[in-house]
Structure formats: structure tokens, C-alpha cells
Amino acid sequence: MKWGVLHFPGSNDERDTVYALESILGYDARLLWHGDRNVSDCDAIVLPGGFSYGDYLRCGALARFSRVMEAVAAFAESGGPVLGICNGFQVLCEAGILPGALVQNRGLKFRCIPTELTIENNTTAFTRSFASGDRAVIPVKHGEGCYVADQRTLAEIQDNGQVVFRYTNNPNGSIDDIAGISNRHGNVVGLMPHPEHAVDPLTGVTDGQALFQSVGAWKEAA
Amino acid sequence: MNFVARVYVVPKPAILDPQGKAVETSLHSLGYDEVGDVRLGKYIEVKLSGDGTAGVEARVEEMCRSLLANEVIEDYRFDVESA
Image (cartoon, rainbow over all chains, first blue to last red; front, top):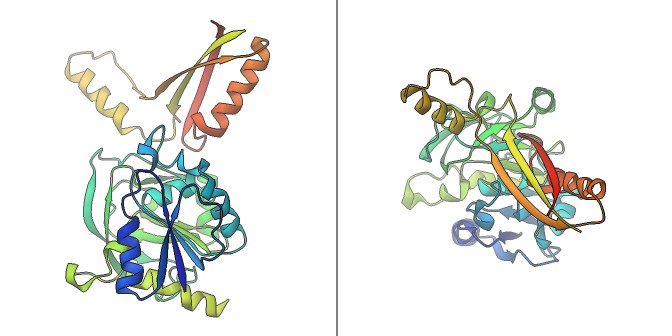
């Protein structure tokens, strides 16, 4: 399986993501520059963390207008698996590919800690390898990770099973402890915690591996 | 004709505004007991050209919806003046 990892000006986790995919998990992976038009050689796409376009205006607001995002939106629309991590999650929300928005942490502080997550929906492209209700420890590092949505959107995503991850101990004030969500079809997932930083036994936790490994199982089941 | 649009963007009332809350608390600690709610937002000045105020307003409205504000979390208003 070949992964494409987006690289916007100001992204900073794209190389860690490629390392996780290639060196730890044994997939092919390549960087996709923000000006690329073609993602058709990729089987799955990751929007990595960082500060795309300096987080100017709002986190993720400018990246959605980059040329590569047109191709990513079409890829997502056609059912291709897309994972947005941290800033990548913010970009997907700003682009309207995922519902809701991410705002400044309720406590005003940048949080950099391991968080325990509950897998609320194990049928998405990135949670297929988990059992429903499984717990995973994955670190967060963000200042703007508080998930918000209006009441109607919130009811809708709850009813559709689009809440994918919840924090055991909410680090940022996210509504209903939401750490990650999916689109209606489950092929697009966004989360604030960083699975690419939880793959190497050297650094202690490897719970993030299952997110990437899920795509294969999900494709087979489809 | 040249115009200047002044755009104000603030968090929606339903969205918690922790920066505004922090400023509110600081104003209270300075003794400004009369201060109620404080909302912290953005002020954006856009210089642009157009044929008339109505057309320019329509364009700025579009800009607000597509980029300057995120309507999930923010309200916006603006005024347009010839420059």
C-alpha cells in the first residue's frame, strides 16, 4: 500500500509520519507538496500536524486553498481513506470535509501529554483494527484542539457514529470529550492526538500503529 | 473607485472564548467592576476597488463567508467606505 503525506509550508510532522509508515510499518510513502495536482498513485493520504501557513487567520484556514487540496477533496469524495492529524484535522474541518471546528484550548495552555482514548467506532478506515471500546494511549501536542460544533451538528455526528475517539481525561475542553471524528462514510478521519508519534517501541507506546494498519483491513472489508 | 472594508470577526456567543475570559478577569482585577462579558476577536481592513458600495459590499460578504470568518465558530460584520 502506498501512502501520500501532505507537506504544506509550515507542516512539521510530515517526516515523522513518513518514518512511521515506512521504517516502522513497512509501507511505501511519499510526500505530496502543496502545489501537487495528482494524488492518484496513493492508496491513502495523511494530512500531518504542524502550523500550515503559519496558522495565519485561523488554524488550517489557508491550507485548504492550496492546489493539492482539490485533489485530496476529490480523493475523499470518491471514498479514499484520508487521515487528518492535529493541524491536518483542523484543515479538514476548515475545508468542510469534516464537520465542526477546533478552537483554542479551554485552559489557554499548549498541552503536550500522552492521552488515553476510547475507540467509539471501530468501523472507520482508521479504527478497523481496534475493538469497539478499546483504549489506546496516544500523545497530544496542541494549543488549539478544543473541538466545537453546534447542537444540531453534534446530535447528527453522535447519531451517525461519527464520534470516533474520546478522551478519558479531556486535555483541552473539547465538547463531549471528543478527540476525533469521521465523515459520514468513515473514510475520512480527523483527530488531535498524534498516532505517528506512538509507533516506535523505542519511545514507549505503539498504540498508534493500529490506526495506520486499519486501512488494509478496512479495504478488504469494503 | 477605491474602497476600504472594515471587517470585525468575533467568536459566536455559544463558543467559549477563553482569551476574552482572561481579559475580563484581568479588567476585574484592575478594579473595573462594571465590566461584563469580554469577547476577543479580529479586525481586518481590506482595501479594494469597485464600481459602487452595493457591489463592493456583496464582494466583501463573499470574502467573509469563504475565508475571513468561519461561520461554525465566528460571527462577522463589516462596513464599507470609499477611500
